[in-house]
Image (cartoon, rainbow, N blue to C red; front, side, top):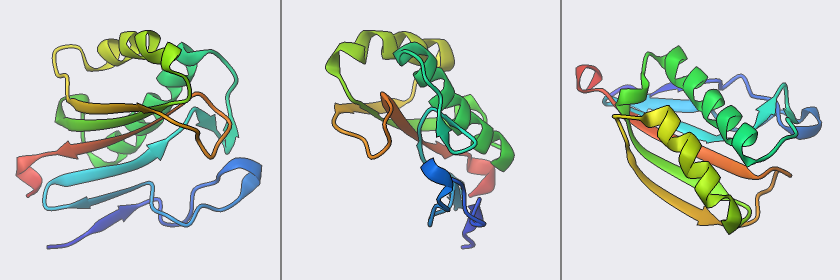
Length: 130
């Protein structure tokens, strides 16, 4: 089995710090995308939970597409919200993104290292890559 790593050259986090992990890893048909926040060029994009959720998922989707995976390949999502009151709005965006292909999911409320409202990661699977 070969493990392919995406983004090992180091992504950029807040304050321009180089991140010490891959954006994603792929092995035996599985793609594990590291947690994504609503960031562009290492800076959190301001906005409400809807805008921040869309951008966090857009960041995941960009990494997935780079690796050759689609929304229908997502089998599990981990979501962290910083406030339970965001849950309903988060779910609306989640449904927009996954529509007829809803993955399994866990959603929790906790503090985040980055000053934003949401962080998400995805796990994908494609049998043709196993």
